[in-house]
Image 1 (cartoon, rainbow, N blue to C red):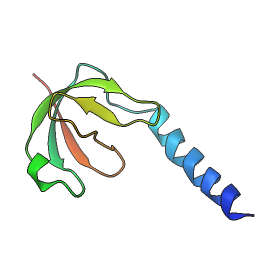
Image 2: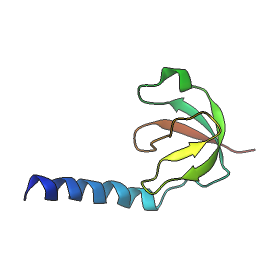
Image 3: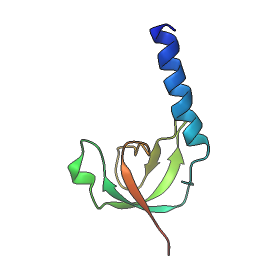
Image 4: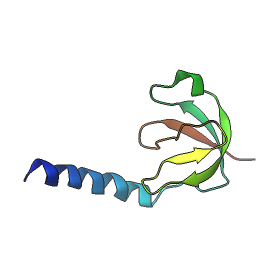
Length: 77
């Protein structure tokens, strides 16, 4: 298997996990940890969009949350 095929396989596996994502537009979340961005810890916001590769965008700031890398908690009201 070539490097390109290996990378494509990893990408398909990653995206496959995102298809069944539990996050939906309009959900309120709290950021517990954002990789490389300690200033985002404990921010609360509403998910406004989910892009084609599953990153979450919302009212917590300009950076996207990567569900497989960052840690967030859904806030149920």
